[in-house]
Image (tube, rainbow, N blue to C red; front, top):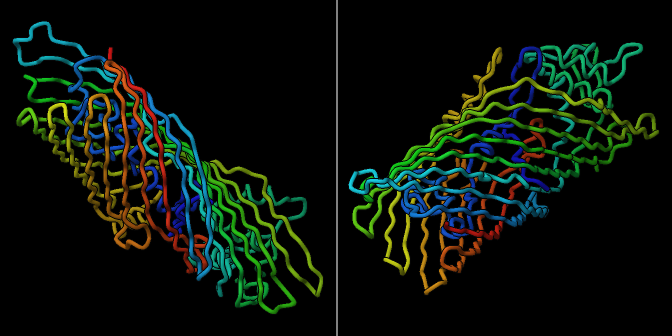
Length: 510
């Protein structure tokens, strides 16, 4: 099951006449860049900020292209394998997912100065296409709870109209009106998302109206068996144009202009069975939700590398915030089983409708990177990167929409992170042996929401002279919490995510 980090809390934002539920972790997902490049880059766990000389190094520091002495071309493929182990109220669950992708390819062209007596020795032009992150992720949790997910529908019904109940005419169909018609109409009203959830619960006989203009649960219980399966598939890719400058073979400068492409699908299936000793009312439900998110954006990088000596290199770079323009398509359906007067009835409430929400903008934080590298001639190297990123500056915006509650949530709950990368390479004639380590703080102040990331890597390469083949392996793990449903219950599954990535690259100089 996919690890969609289900929301810690629900946000509803008015998009002109449409209301939409937001998952706070979506912005973190598209704002986090995985170490995903050439096999050599991956084997050193991305510690390339002061090294350069690799197409993927342009991610860490755009000045890295200026270290090339010859034109260079590289492409890479990855196999990713993930296993998520969950514990929900003492019960264990497991989900696995695998994915193959062409993660990185690009070229750098070297233009030597005709006059080598001048300070500018060469200019480099680079173009790369890189996978910043693959979202193929599945999670599955199961267990018993004393809290029913039917409370989700009840909360939307009783409080979804700016803290008051949803009007009854919004949950009942009129003569000749179908569920699809009503669901579509609710897309046009303020607080429409909450009205839709209330309508699904009402039509599925999970909740009933009362004589005092509010709603109650249809049934009782204290023991509920629950399952949550979540699957996310897609990518965050980046097309980069680069320029680099070699000044006196001592100072190397570079800049990137990046175009980002985001495309991912999130599917959640929540199942619940009332195992209490009841003979009337609600018995079972299956609640399916699907969100397709896509869009594009841009960012830029600047950086420099200074050769203090032939062996010691010092690097620094800055990546701007990423400004994304995104859109969501959303669909859902609900199946229920209810006992009424001793007879069991099954209901399938399926609007058969995909809601296209208005476009919105997300600004993800920029990063600062400081790097050191020591090159032992032809024998090998050691490299270190430090990266600082302030996730609390994440923000949403859209014309005619108020995202103040969302942005305040990020400001109050997220934090600046420190990330450390260490990599080393040892060369034995044509063979290179590599290893790396990476640690990144949690973007959340409450580290139980999402924990710190720890990664280990290794690899081997063989040089044919003007070309080489490299293999890289990475392992990383990160723990996080997942709610059974976005609101209405408080129980959380504890999920330990373990990931493996095997990469292979071919690189040629010409």
